Length: 148
Image (cartoon, rainbow, N blue to C red; front, side, top):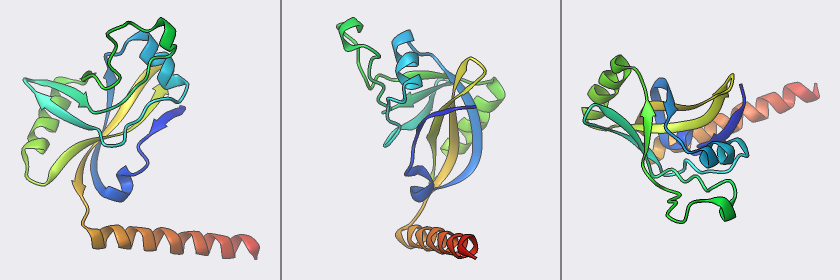
């Protein structure tokens, strides 16, 4: 399993509650572009409308700009593929106050390209500071153990 694109800030800004694996409706140039490691998930989110799930705000540039369609949009809304049970669960979670659905990473399973999404709760400023402090102390402990 290879990670192609990651949303690096998601664990700092959100507390992840429930993870889901989703397929996506993509163009061939978008798949090639993601496999090259191009694309951004920063600032994007997932919405549930009319019993379907969409990825909004993610940027995926075309694989070759010269061969891309003239009306190609990097940040178009992309449909995600999930089971009805997962869609219902995501819809119920998204209706709760303070919860949002965020994309975490693009990765592959075999030859399929998948998007990992999570139901998340936003962190306050002091929670972010605690996360940074815990990460730094963990790194320091690992360094001291490595040198001994």
